[in-house]
Length: 313
Ligand code: BDR
Ligand code: CA
Image 1 (cartoon, protein in one colour):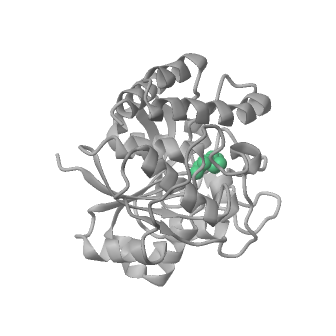
Image 2 (cartoon, rainbow, N blue to C red):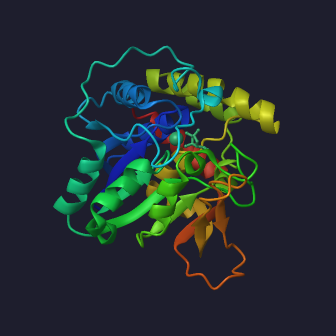
Image 3 (cartoon, protein in one colour):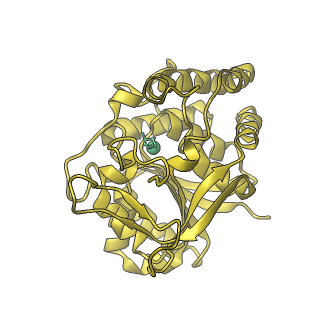
């Protein structure tokens, strides 16, 4: 099978970093056309820095990394240094990147790439707030029908939220953008907290990363060790949930995930529930399904895939 062409839209973030590494390690499954950065976990100057650090760590300095939107559509930027540290990629001691950013704006790259490829051949993989994707859809509505699929990390139903009682961080940061994306008509697959909170890096799983013995394996182990303190404290969980790698793992092994095709709407008005993904899991409305909302993961299969692929870099 020819590899699926993807654009990774991201705000690294240690878990974004692992998602990117998994994609870069899997050229037979995915061809990374470009990485588009957005403000989210940390401001844009740091997400563009971190994305390049990750490419250099993987030895893939030819990947195009673009800077995108530096703030949400209608709200002030909320960041997550309390989870990811001051740089967004705290944990390993990695060198400052030397590869340059690609010329042009991330949003234009997304639009041009979708227009330059046959309809239905480019998949978007958002791992952060949906500002870049929504801006592209607003600027160029014709791209909606050209998108093969949007596979995104965001939202939660059974698990509620992680930044507010009901909102997950990526959706909360830019609910207006999420609303545009979920209403776009493009096929959407959602990896919510309901899935990612089942993808926990236990001590044994982290030992497996470290046991790879390469700079990538060791850096990933150090990243997840840093990142896990937040979830251990908050949820009393065994380790860090690897949220964003669920997106790139799905592209390689969709059979590891289960979910339902349902209606998902985004709350954009109530300050109390802002950014909530109102997921009609039980089909109690007659609103048309617009997303495949995942709920199950074969966690051992997922971590085996990650360890096997990361060992290639
Ligand atoms: C999401 O928010 C970010 O902190 C992570 O990188 C992930 O994309 C989880 O809620
Ligand atoms: Ca992210």
